[in-house]
Image (cartoon, rainbow, N blue to C red; front, side, top):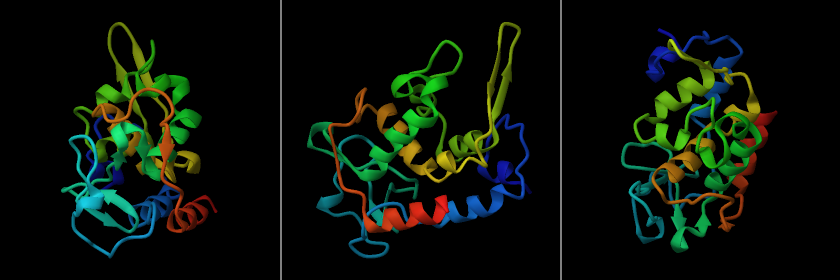
Length: 196
């Protein structure tokens, strides 16, 4: 059974290569952000965020929702974002903006990721980014290249997802977030380990 099947990604055309597996395994168990209050801690007042996707725990430095999916932590009327959301904004603008346009809003040849995340789940998103996607109709051919071997994307895939999720749910507006929490030591360590 392949990674694409496990992720539930539809229309993924590129097979997973041996080079992708260590990176995927690393990402699946890696810490993302700041120091934890306590491993597996449950929701408290400090986890309260704006928007419908409320973090219920901090696990290995990343906010997680009730389903264990990475989520954002946004406060102060959308002005203050957590570091992974800010990193997602930065990485989106380094790697995704060329096709998908500013703020994930889409372009004439690539769909809006803000709209896509209203119906696509985390596993589908990661599967498409890692393996690519091809949609062919009588009027157009849309091709999303595979980024599964690109560390500048895959080392930050959760961050990009969290940023786009916050955009999709209307919690983070267009443009650069005004303020962000500092990058934690745990995040720096994970980033260094992934980027090599």
